[in-house]
Amino acid sequence: MKPFTWNGQPSRVVFGAGALAHLERELDLLGAQRPLVLCTPGQAAQAHALAQRLGPRCAGVFGQAVMHVPAATAAAAREAAARLAADCSIALGGGSTTGLAKAVALTTGLPILAIPTTYAGSEMTPIYGITEAGLKTTGRDARVLPRTVIYDPELSLDLPLALSVTSAMNAIAHAVEGLYAQDGNPVTDLMAEEGIRALAAALPRLRARPRDPDARGDALYGAWLCGSVLGSVGMALHHKLCHTLGGSFDLPHAEVHTVVLPQALAFNAPAVPEALLRIRRALGPGAASAPAALFDLARDNGAPVALRDIGMREADLDRAAEIAVTHPYWNPRPFSAAQRGEIRALLQRAFEGTRPD
Ligand SMILES: NC(=O)C1=CN([C@@H]2O[C@H](COP(=O)(O)OP(=O)(O)OC[C@H]3O[C@@H](n4cnc5c(N)ncnc54)[C@H](O)[C@@H]3O)[C@@H](O)[C@H]2O)C=CC1
Ligand SMILES: O=C(O)/C=C\C(=O)CC(=O)O
Image 1 (cartoon, rainbow, N blue to C red):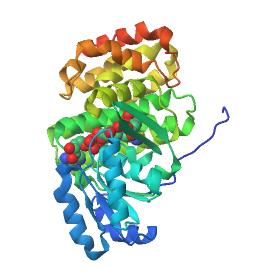
Image 2: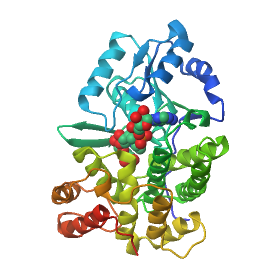
Image 3: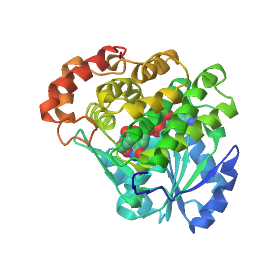
Image 4: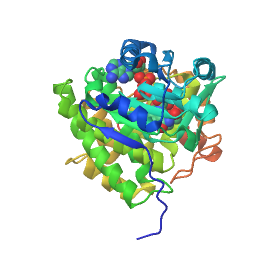
């Protein structure tokens, strides 16, 4: 066994149908007396219902979370937390809401209690992302890791099916990159393979019965595992491309992950044979290569497989390639300015939705 360092996340996790009933207990354990509830405009009703349940204990609701955490939104949330004398953030929603809570925590240290309603997995990572002047900056900081996570499958029963599939692919992408991470280890490998398996198996069940609580629970379990992998090891080419396309071209996050993942894995395939075997095994029996099987998993569950179908302009691909190779993340197959042509070709295949070999 090669030596490794395990920086598994110390978040406290409460998991199960109806787990939201434990919110007050978990706030008490955090010593939080005045939580600020954060949400997106689309989830305001859920957030206000939670605030009403908490009564005078609740400092208020800030309902302006949006994807990629614009710097101005982060500043407004910090101002609201200060004005309301909040001592904790409750992030009720997906990665955009958790990301806003992280932006507040980054400068204020306000602890986060996350209540995930998608499969993004941000609740299990110390990674933050803030977007300013069309450029997304990401970083890692222990202060942004949520202290407590309440996973309640009942909160995702109404997650739109299309987003359920792409958000699951976002989670699978964390695990895929974790399997070839520079700082991967046997524990994260186990979590990654099980996370991919759980999510891939849940998708057809969700398509058949979107409100199936067992399928939603299995998907959330897979998201927890994949998010834990992302929180423990580094990201590589795939995430760099998605941060570029999402942050600089304002493309929808989960959809970008869904489209790019097969293409990025195909680019890395020659350098990551062990990861391919684990991914292939996790996806179940079939003759397709791991990249092609991921492409098929997305396509067969009704998800987009081409950048041109999610708002990308072909004229922007050159600039996307340029940004992607500037300050690249580590990757098992090097990509830097010298590989700009290869990255541009990868983006062309993603733009057209070409099924990998
Ligand atoms: N730092 C990290 O570790 C990670 C960060 N992220 C970030 O998270 C953001 C994307 O998060 P996502 O969860 O993909 O999307 P999201 O949080 O933006 O949600 C997408 C839409 O779905 C709605 N929604 C969410 N849950 C719902 C539910 N259960 N029922 C009905 N509607 C619901 C939201 O209101 C929103 O309008 C991006 O900014 C991405 O960068 C994503 C993964 C990991
Ligand atoms: O791309 C991902 O799914 C993981 C990390 C981020 O999205 C960075 C961020 O929080 O914006």
